[in-house]
Image (cartoon, rainbow, N blue to C red; front, side):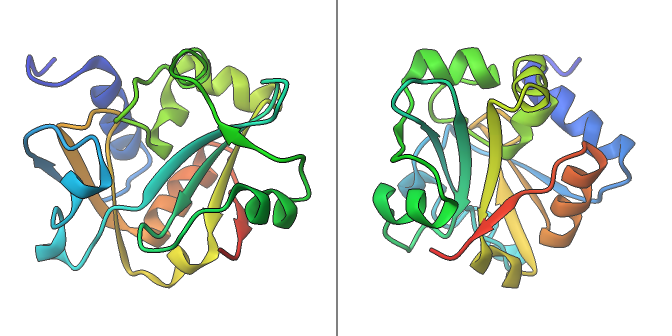
Length: 173
């Protein structure tokens, strides 16, 4: 194992390689906010998407929302469009328990972690994407570690998710 790479990041990268997904791995200082992610991947024509981890009031259902970082997020609008009760931001403890990730490293690549796999299989975790992201040729996501960025084709990310049995719900934000 690469000493400077977390086990979760190594697992994410290995899963992409196993699925035959091409990507570029960029290493950088910790970028755990959208502000710090700005500019990373630009040389490839890619930008990070905003990743929000949301829950219902009872903390029994979770949604990982990938969206354009320039768009405003309104929980009531997104909840209504998804046909679910109003969501709010999940706690750091819920994030850790459901995805195996820490704040600042939230990424759709969490699907390779055991807690997320179990949550997806049990119907407690759902992946949701802003439909506008589909128009991007390239996208950036953390490989479950905010010190690295994966640059990949959006269609390849969707193909990877499909190989994991995941079809993201699409919502217009």
